[in-house]
Length: 269
Image 1 (cartoon, rainbow, N blue to C red):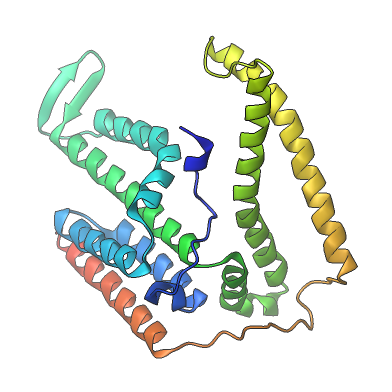
Image 2: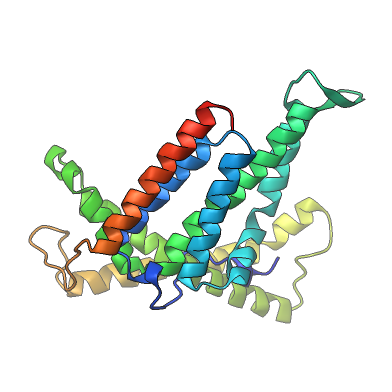
């Protein structure tokens, strides 16, 4: 897996219907989509959500290969989760029994649905970051969490930290790639040897990476201080967030979708 395959936090500029939605609308839609995913029970509800995801990807204009490429870093987690569900899900219909491992029909279904749920969950959240810039995402998060200000929750600071974290992911990945290329040019080997040897080989990468990250954090802090940044108190926004007709329709559609999936899941569909 190449580091360029990690696309979390990247933004694909565009003018699609999804790009033009209010960031708060997209955040609410993703949350409702996640709730609907965990309410799914069987093929029909998963098929409905899969078709919804495909429609959203089509409307967004984001290349499918970019979403598929972003899945590569989580392949190990998906396979590991599938194996756990496959071997450790009890059931009445035993298919294979080998030593301490037992595969049941219920385990096969559980593993399949768990893999589908994880992949659809990741695709939905990727679509949010692909179609929303970090600045708009920060504004949307701060607006949605606005009521928490009444109980002294530092909403602006939390939203700013999340935005900076998302923004720094591609930068750190690029920095890591440069350091690895420089170390390989000096004869470093990261792909052969035992697991312990590979771990030791990562030390020449981690040390300069941490130094670079701390240096960037210090430069960012100095830059914010030079611009007299003092948090969200009294700050204004260049772009005011306002719900449009498409935003209201999108929220209503995802709310209806969540209710439909919940009702169908209640009946085991």
